Image (tube, rainbow, N blue to C red; front, side, top):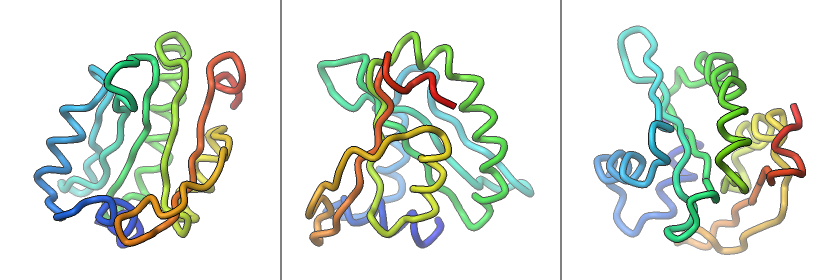
Length: 145
């Protein structure tokens, strides 16, 4: 896993466990909305949409992480996400992303995809790390490029 991804994800766990991360990603995913990308015969990236709320099926959270080959996967993932826009616009009222304040590569990609920075979640990580909250909101900016 890339160091920035590890810093972003591991600080949210009391006890870091990659198997549990995989299980959580699949178990909380919006049906048929989780993928992996392989590069040179190895897993290079995972991404998808999870339910952001147990009681609101129209509120999703996007996530992605990968290995040192993740950069090579970004164009493919971006094209794939753009093909999903009609389904997202139809089924999702609010799509959000939480990202470590120092994960500048992620911030740039999210903003390129049209995510709007809504604020700072202070001390969101278990060690006091701050996170940014980005979102796309139906009828406001889900349809922006």
